[in-house]
Image 1 (cartoon, one colour):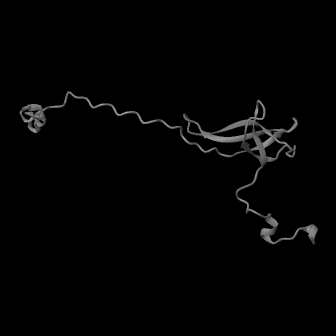
Image 2 (cartoon, rainbow, N blue to C red):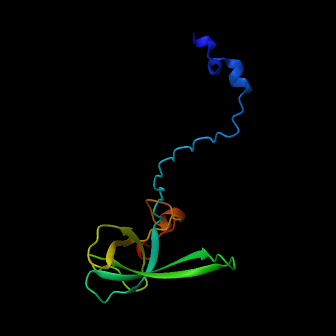
Image 3 (cartoon, rainbow, N blue to C red):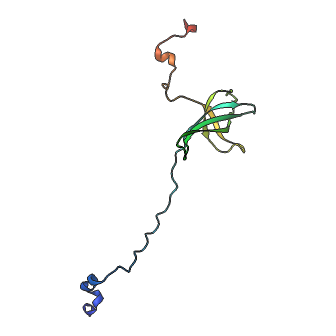
Length: 134
């Protein structure tokens, strides 16, 4: 009985033209947020007038989209300095934290250069004695 129905036979399907049938659209893949690692923010202390707060100026460079030149971007951040140990001109690294006040979302920590050897001073590396120790 079923073999007598023409559209169930393979010869009928091979002769059928499916040019008028549009493929169904592919369901959209879920869009996940991009994971962007936070770069450390390094800057110089430019003001220490407030108690437990330092004003830090940071400089970064970006490429101008039209002229393809490096443009210097300067930004100032308020950072928490609980011990008031930083002075004007000190290099600091800003670490992100919970909001401490309306403008303070960073904690200032001393800047450690990645190019210096870890766990010692330069005099020990060169085997030089300090003048005060002689």
